[in-house]
Amino acid sequence: MAKKTIERKIPGGKLIRMDVEFTSKIEALKITGDFFLHPEETLESIVSACVGLSLPIDKAYLTAQLEEIMLGSEAQLIGAEVADLVSILEEAVQ
Amino acid sequence: MKYRMISFQYFDAYMNMAIDEAIMEGVRLGTTLPTIRFYGWSPSAVSIGIFQGIHNEVNLQETKKQGVDVVRRMTGGGAVYHDKLGEVTYSIIAPVDHFPSNIMASYELICADILSALSSMGIEAKFVPVNDILVKEQKISGNAQTRRDGILLQHGTILYQVDVETMFSLLNVSEQKISDKLIKSVKKRVTSVIDQGKATMVDLQRALESGFSQDRQIVQGNYTDLELERATVLVKEKFSSEAWNFRL
Image (cartoon, rainbow over all chains, first blue to last red; front, side, top):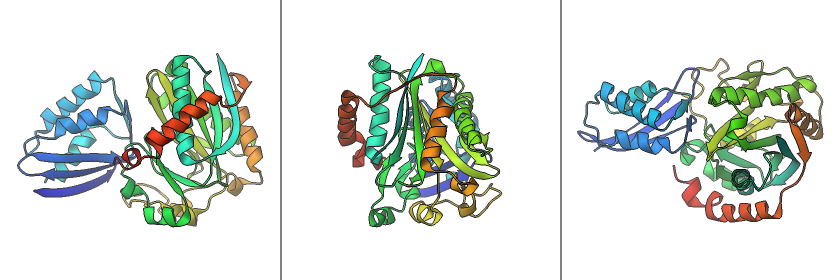
């Protein structure tokens, strides 16, 4: 099992840190940082959508999944975009 | 609509967070007015954002050594050192329909009251999205918001005086965090009311009360016994617990 941590400061935004464990799929993921997400519980759904994904990540699929979660929760992510989350996760599992 | 305003009082970190949640519950239930409160932290404390990793952000060995409490907030945002003698913290708690639905717009609206307070003290500051107030390029106030069950809580600090050595002995500042900042030295990125001129903590408290009173019908008040009892329960069950503070 590989383990990797990636930290990225979004220009003009906030810091996102991902601690990921992976094999041929994402086994575990922790997302932390100084961003804002309303409602806060949305983060659990975001993490759940990522865990179990086969690698390499299908960026379009994951982006669509996360955007659906955001829309369904009427969520607002402040300090980052969904595209940033996908990009950081992709970097973390390379 | 009337707002209750509660003047500056000291509580410990856990009680400060618990009081915010207790008042949110009261406003939701209609048992208390929307509230603006001002408070300090005794003992000095570090608060971290709801999404932060405690070990990543805080030098826990140093906080223990210096007798500084550590608490996780209900709000997002970053790690903050709350110096007992160095700042005034505010919370505003009210129904969400008092504010724009757009989160960034609501930050700007509430922070305008802080800008007004600072301006009355001769300090020209600006709101910088997402949640900061700067004097030129130096941060004097940070703010954080949550919305739960139809109630908005925004709280933030206004720095009166800064002990940068202590602050940065307690907080772990990531290189990534400052990678896009003009001022690379973290110690030069903050300023305070004292740095900007002569004023007392009481001057700052009064200016903030005045700033937050604009365009609101204010009733001066205090905490109710019920709120403080509820907050005491929340301290025990949540805010002082390892399960809460060490969840990430």
